Length: 116
Image 1 (cartoon, rainbow, N blue to C red):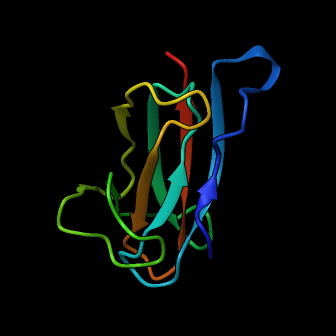
Image 2: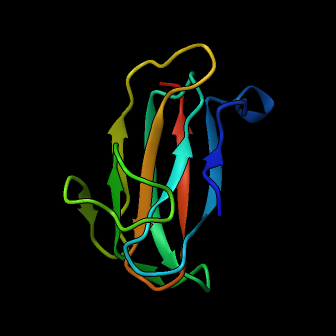
């Protein structure tokens, strides 16, 4: 799989939030690169197993390689928790990238991007 490019998205219906389900690569701890939109100022995410409902652990990093194992410099998240962090202002076209992983062999990250 390739990186998930969200750089061109706009919040729907004049809202200040955009929500996405991100498929994560096979293999526990492997990351998906997510390219953020320039308007995003805060991101939150949680991870589930492939069924989309069973909570699992996850991780977020600011450096990585799409499809590879998450590096040592990441923040682990507990099962069933939502992790939220501020995002610095990006360029007019992109807000930079984050790298998401889950503890299950296959799974999803549910990501919200806010323009706070």
